[in-house]
Length: 94
Image (tube, rainbow, N blue to C red):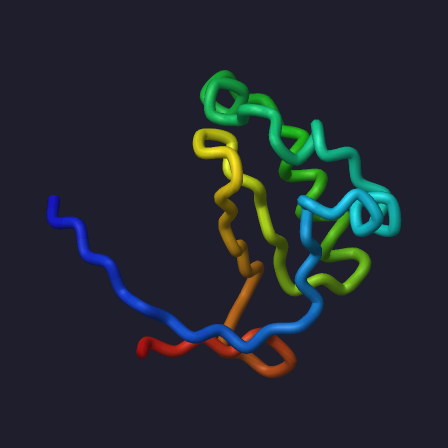
């Protein structure tokens, strides 16, 4: 496997920042539900609470979320639910 790093430009609105307590409250989300480990649960046929968080964000019209890193405190990931579609964030390679 080859690791390749690419630079992308993202134009997006409707992104819920899970690092922001006020945003969590406004969305009705508990951060613990969003950051609970999910791989083992899925492997045994369960449904992770983080999937319910995604469903809730879709219900309120979010296009994605900023997810705090569990492995590297202070870092974060941008998660888009969809992109490059009508009324969705735009993503392009730089």
